[in-house]
Image 1: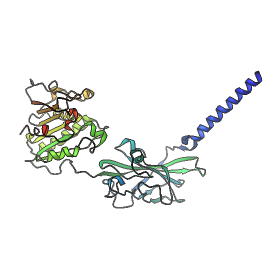
Image 2: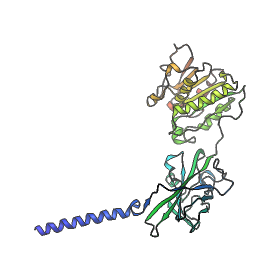
Image 3: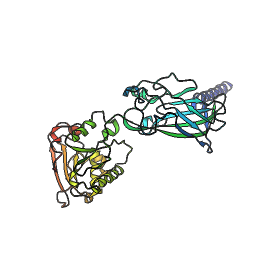
Image 4: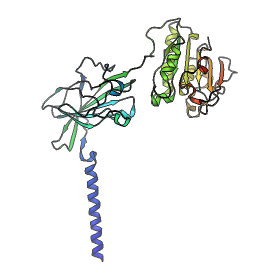
Amino acid sequence: MRPVKRLCRLLGIIAAQSFMVFLILKNPLCAKQLQTDSSAVTLQLSFADAAWDGKTIPKGQQCLEYGGNGASPPILVNNIPPQANKLVLEFSDATYKPCDKGGHGIIGYAIPSGSKKITVPAIPGQSFDLPEGFNLIKEHCGADLLMQPGAYIGPCPGLGNLYYVTIKALYESPDKSTSQLLGIGRLDIGTYTDDPSYAFPATITINSKYFFFFHNYYVEINGPRGACKYYDLLRSFTDKGYVVVSQLRNQNMDPVHYAEEAAKQIHTILEAGVPSGNITVSGHSKGGVIALNVAALLQQPDINYIILAGCGINLLAKMYPDPLLVNGKFLSMYANSDNIAGSCNPLLPSTQHWFSTRELVLDSPKGHRLFFEPDAIWLTHIEFAQ
């Protein structure tokens, strides 16, 4: 029986080794090794079409789902190492992390022999029908979001996201089993937005009323077109005669840093001669916490602050400012059915003499979502300081 046991053991070892070889060959990272080289040169990248400026995506070059027929920009690539025989283009969305690092498509392009400078043609959007010289490495991420599949997808949605392309120059072995990185470069494609601009105004009018609004965490994650009607809210403030200033944030933005930038903008308005009573700072939920941080930074007793269900949020406890630094005229509002936020009184005690505060507990079954859209139950109160 011993020879039989030895034979079985030997066959088991052979089978295990064969299985490991099979796994290695099936793994693309093992089957095709990319050798990095610290001496890789910097590729010189520029647009071959004047319609692209690296700042704003040209009209019509967005994805199909947002009314475009977006193709990639034709790109001039210079300083290509003489040994390189292939470019790899990685299109990315720097703002939306699931589609960063090549999420808008990774596509190879053959370099004509001996070329130091070439123009990479445009790649059609959301199509697998690639022009001559291209090969698909990884299709775009939009298919996971129920968008039309393809090799490359143009910018979408129009939320001001930043899009860019990384281009790598490689030497690829004839059997395509190994590649060596010889050069690399990055080119910002630009931002795309199809929404009204609520950016900081280029011209400041002394007699105007300014309304700074900070949106909630929901908009950070889901964008402005979900259940929270971000643009409807901004329009409702505009309809009341305010110059509205608001910016979309993503979840990676530090709230304290964001408050610092907003405080700088308000300082600019004050220095232009706008009375502090003509400035209102507001925010819902996490946006309310940002507004409180602005109040702590500015310490201006006559600026108006409207905190919409922004106090008593346990998950944001570490983001609240020191109450001793907070200054201004405050109106706090939240729904009596809200199980996330609550009263601002612990943070803004009425005994402090350097600011005034008023709080409204509104009778509504909508809970924390009361401020997801304009509603007369709270909107009628926003001019409390006037």
